[in-house]
Figure 1 (cartoon, helix red, strand yellow):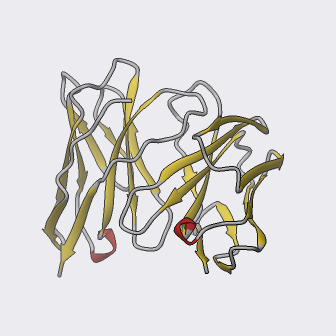
Figure 2 (cartoon, chains in turn brown, orange):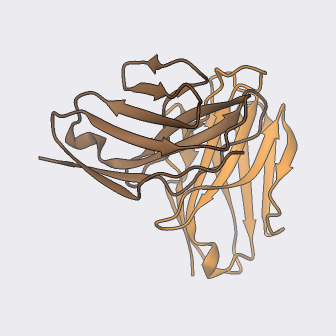
Length: 111
Length: 115
């Protein structure tokens, strides 16, 4: 699996868009980019994933660069409940191969 | 709320005890996973079951013994643990099909303390 680089921590004001970057320059052609978050004392929560195209769901948007070497997770209107550790995880499509978590970004939403 | 249910939520056990952690899902998923998470660290994969057969063991000590009695249940049997095994143990499930639409769904974990 490709290695990732994420900033250790970020702050964002409540109500503003939170943009979380991830560098995955060694990603291979068949690896999808998954994003999870983990709120304190809970299990990781799936947010979104994509391969090449930008994706959007009710929680977030995922922007993947054309060369696929980096991506950005966007939370459009951050709330205090979005304070969590966010993990960007490249993963080969399909198969029961698990997820390999990196250190992630601790996003703190400020009131 | 999560669709993967783990029991108990908390467990304290001595080093000579035998205990079991339980995980249940009713999403029809055929792959199930155990992860271990130490404080302030990311989750680490321990075991993967695919169609009720063990497919990945990440060199986990034998004092941890997984079991998958059916497609909805996953157990982790614990015996002769050490204090350093204290951690949050997370269970997850996913469809095992060859499709990108197979995110893992996690439970909220069992917080284990070994005394």
